[in-house]
Structures are given as C-alpha cells and as structure tokens.
Length: 178
Image (cartoon, rainbow, N blue to C red; front, side, top):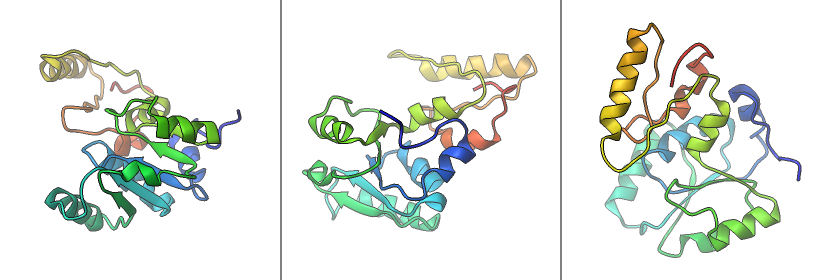
C-alpha cells in the first residue's frame, strides 16, 4: 500500500498534512507538543482521550493548547475510541497497543498509524541513542548526554525524561547527537 504521507524530512512531512484528517490518541506529555507542532500545518485535528469532559486535567491541557493558539476538536469519555473513524493519520499514545481492534480496523481501512516518538525517529537526521529499562534511565541518559557534549557534540536530550523532541527536530542537524 502506498503511504498517504511523505516522511523524508520535516518540511516535506508537514507540507503533506494540509488535506489530512488527523487523530491524536492521548493528551499526555508527549502528545501535547505533537499537537502544537502539527497545528500550524493542519487544523483538522481531533484529540481522543479517556478523560471525562468535566476532568480538571482536561481543562488544564485545553488551556495549555489554547495558549499556543491550538484549538483541536476533542473526543473525551470512557468510550472515546468509539468515535475513531475515517482519519488519515492516527498518532497513538506510546502506551496503546498497536493491535487494539480500533487501530487494526482503521489501519485496514487505510489510515497511517504512528506515534510521536516513531515520527521523531523517522524525521531525525542525527544518530539517536536510546535507553530503556525499569530503573536508572534518566541517570544513564544524562550521563550519555554529558559524555557526548564533552566529546564536542551538540546534544538534544529528551524523551520520557520530560522533554519531547519532535518540536525541536527542525533544529537538529546530522552532526548532532540525540
């Protein structure tokens, strides 16, 4: 199947979004910068989340996005995925299994399913150092960053340590380290 979007570089990817219906599943830490990054290039974005409409966290997230002049549509409730239909691109939260029936259905229909971190990895021109595990990730990530900086590299440190990197991808060069 031919991809409905182009992911060779950030500018080309962003220009391919103009006529797409975009779903962002999960309004968590990594997806908020994703929404901000996408918004100037496409205002046809719907955010899906299991929070209830009267949840104070939802109000805080909506206020955060409004301050960045982002006004996506919202689909929130415990049955939020019931309304996941006919989107061209779906960004799932990292915690969501890719074999969830709603995602499988949309993928079979032709939707491009990805995540903020997967998109970043595809767009990033620099070598990426990744750290996984249960304990010590922040410490090891910080140590690697400092070693790379000491070696003379410009370093972008982020991920689950609180700094999403997608909104910085256009500043990253092939000679940098992430």
